[in-house]
Image (cartoon, rainbow, N blue to C red; front, side, top):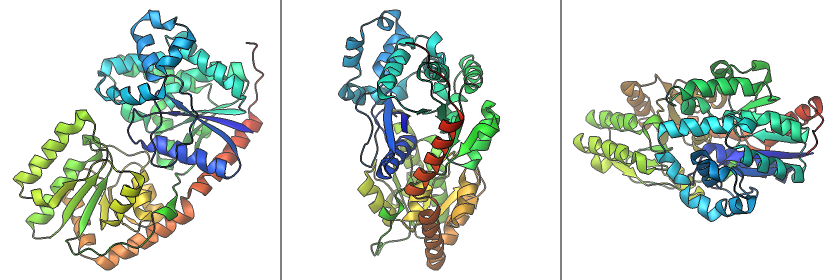
Length: 434
């Protein structure tokens, strides 16, 4: 059985969903399964070996131009292929972060409209490519693509799954009337999807309620990482205990709140420091500057370091350099790969009690929770761990063992393949001519 797994590129930045899809495809291939990872919009960027297909469908340049003017909806496909070149898409992808909200709303609607929208040519090219590859099942990257499920099923005669990746954060911020229209199209298109795949039980339940999805068709395949690569001896450090932050640098992930917790800890005499790593987009540079300035005014400039975006090897070294990880997200997180990675490295984690975090805490035993938005509670939880090396070691060891046992890439791949086989067996529709 061949599976075509579509993955939406994130414009040249490391993205948890992209890295998950790439890791899943690699683990399935290592198990002898026939899986094609097919990027959409832009090339995938992953900190592991990229196993994605060479051609990019729904190329970001073509999608934008076809949205902007009808002329590009009728250009020959060979012209489109020039605009789908990986080098070009890789260089322009990060511009998406600067796109105005109303433009994002219209473009999201255009894709959701499927065969009836301005991206019909891109859909035709995707169908043509999939026909040549002859998959037995197709998985869409997220709910913004459910509008293509019906034409894919009609053309290919195969079932269609759809990933659930935290779309609520994006959709809820669209301006009206686009937000309401996107919700309507998602609910309509969901009827044509044979199953949805969430990475946590929290998001399986939340997405079903938030988007009106049939809960009985929402499945949970827990996240998986290559856990053993993070394990290893931690270098001896002579400096003060270190708090780590490993996530995109943006208001939603809570670096400012963590900075305030650091200032609180320092104000009561604790010796500690904060190291932050993660992607910083141009639009969020003023946010980091504001965080840095606030720490300076609190007298903590020398206690904070931003190390930038990190490769896989640098990420592992970063995790081994810290004593506790904290990512106090402002919004309920749907996934949380950094939690598993930190625990796999033997590092305990402090997180707000919302989203997927209580679930990960219960599953691993390596997490301390605090009330969301409570800087005092965050500082207290951090202080407890910073003051107790034995407790840190116990939580890190328990969490690391749980990640190896329950969140390995091989286990994730096996569960995903069982779902694929079950859906493929129970959902078969004859293809139409074309």
